[in-house]
Length: 533
Image (cartoon, rainbow, N blue to C red; front, side):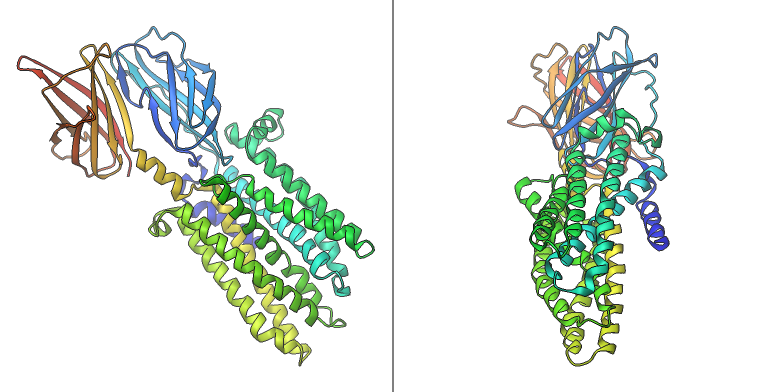
């Protein structure tokens, strides 16, 4: 276990300095007012648009004087709206928000805007969690998964596949204890989820507020199902060989409920198309629970030299072949939806974790094939040597399986490429407003490299603005490069478009929009763009 603890710690470090930061599984793709916008009049509502449905946890407004005002927020699908109080004072404001995405992950951030002229942007603590808290979330996810795998998967194997094997009597007690331990472990994970929603503090774990916050997330039904599966599996082992029909029924229910807990939350289960993804996660989890959960009791049965292990091994092998095929098929489907491209294997932490997981699963498949094709047939002709070799092979499978589960737990800290690509496709948008004119500016993809821009012009009182020419100039104050200047063209959609807009550096760029209204009238709007790497 010390080695596994080291693996979990290395996971947190390997995922980078942002591992303690609330990495966004839901992505903010637009806001009104836009981040960095300068408006002539105070808005009455702030709207935050995400790439998927979310639920607000907390929205606050920080004024130029540093005073924080709590706002009442409502959610409609992927948009969170909060009414603003009367803002009579000019200057810069900051909207601080924290939401929970549909996959149960809390996300926080801020959006700034200015009334009249920009002032000093109010300071706000970064939405970050201590590295120890992030590590605890990975650890509890790993612990619950391991206990469910051994407790539920092991129970299904001992009760259904090995119900006639006397050599499994001692293993039933072990899997029963693991199954019962799922209940408190799931409760602890539930409490940590609530503390994470509230900001990531160990001190909040035991508070009623944390439990109420966790109840509002998709982790709540997942935790209830996980605890229920553990209890059902424990009752199945308690029923034992004396009541085989009842034990089989309880074990089967525990298996279904455990798989359902994985399909109730998580970024894979909540991805679109949701019915397919939920079913794929359910089948994937059910197959993995049985395959990996059977290894420990199977190894224990092999250690009993007084019993013939061949019938038990053959029954497990026949069942495992079908489940491994389902595991591979559903895993492929889930990866295709989540990854959206092979480059994500090297460009994203999620992809790198998946690559390592595939190496681990491939090793497990190779060992399973070796056991089935080479070692199992030898059990029929020899007793000691093949049995010891099979025990060693199963122990290696258990070790690799634990490493795979640790890698899966690491996904708690990083969003899938699917979520990142959704934000990239949305680009970024800003709104700038003066008495003479205003503009909605969209830049796609909003990352370092070649971009395109679209500009919608209006008068300062929201009327149509017929411009003769529009030019955009972008400069990066921190870089010693000449401004990027491009002429825009008017498109049939009523917006002014700029193609092939090179932005070679990430960071803050200042955009000047020169609007030629007539031969004698010209106005200039200025705003800032935050270009992503």
